[in-house]
Amino acid sequence: MALGGLTALALATGAAGCSGGERPEGAETPARGADEETARRPARLIGDGSTAETGPQPHQPRPERLQPRHKPPQFVVFSWDGAGEDKQKLFSHFRGVGKRHHATMTYFLSGVYMLPTDRRRLYDPPRHRRGASDIGFNDIKGVKDTVAQLRGAWLDGNEIGTHFNGHFCGPRDGVGTWSVKEWKSEIRQAESFVAHWRTNARLKGEPPLPFDYSKELVGGRAPCLEGQRRLVPAAKAMGFRYDASSIGGRQVWPRRIGGLWDFPLQDIPVPGRGFETLAMDYNFLANQSGGRTRGDPSRHRAWGEQFREGLLAGFDRAYYGNRAPLFIGDHFESWNGGTYMRAVESTIGTVCAKDGVRCVSFKQLADWMDAQDPKLLAQLRALDVGEKPKGGWGRFPAARPVKRAAG
Image (cartoon, rainbow, N blue to C red; front, side):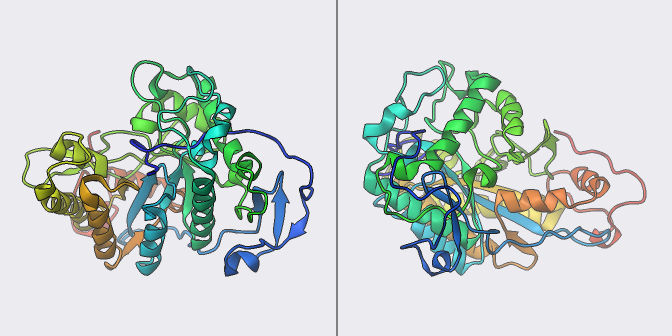
């Protein structure tokens, strides 16, 4: 059964504590059964052993401050909503794609993907009955397979963010109606499900995740891109550094909102049409097959090509223009015959190989943004969509203030 941010059945959430027979917190043990790199990293187990401290995350770039009169890197962030491994094996597939093309990514885990169906009542969602979830629940094999991919993804250098839990959308008690207090509860539960997966899924013989999720979790994307206004203060209080829930962003350099970096899904061209839409597979699908995930097979190839060409058009106007980071969102789904997955894979291979391009996670981008001169960032933000500095990057920033971009 597919685990997807919009159509799949997700896992129940749980916050159960430790049980007898586990090593005490702080015990040193190798990550038994994990891959070679995990086995080489001494692990200090946390709580019931679902997670462990294993040292700094591998393969992290050191952010460098951009100097005046130098062209900025072209950052591209590929992100995945509701990341989980199911029989389609798209999580493991795109981990391999990332390795081949030296691309790190952000995997937004739905917390309910860490529990099997029979533990669903451990999730107490805001404004909904206990055990409810609009994306369903997982089984034990699904939990085990997802954990294996999360473990490997982190060791590869990727980010494990959050897509929160039950994926409740719309005006009737959806996430857009939640209070700051309710968002905090949702975040705490998402962290707890990761911190207790071994107990809740009865998988105590499995190796731990090689990170402390309460420290590693620094950002997320809300279901259906709803609720950011009250999510941001909650996320800030919970230690987040960015939010990726904005809708209809423009391809300009990011700014902070409420103390967090705002990394929105951006509008990009829809080739052959007179409008733009968000740089996400589902949004192209909605415009192509009216939201149907099994549209006309004879059009699958053309739809995938349109998505790919739209992504490349958005990339080109940043790469040859203002160099604003490009944010691309996707789901591990085989919608319309898998055409969007093929388009994304092709795009990764094309753009990540270009000179000056860095395919990074949102967390890595936040690290870079934090290291920059605020005055230089303000000059970058003043460049409009696709606007290259007058006189070129060799004369940037200008000696006098540049007109601020709209939006």
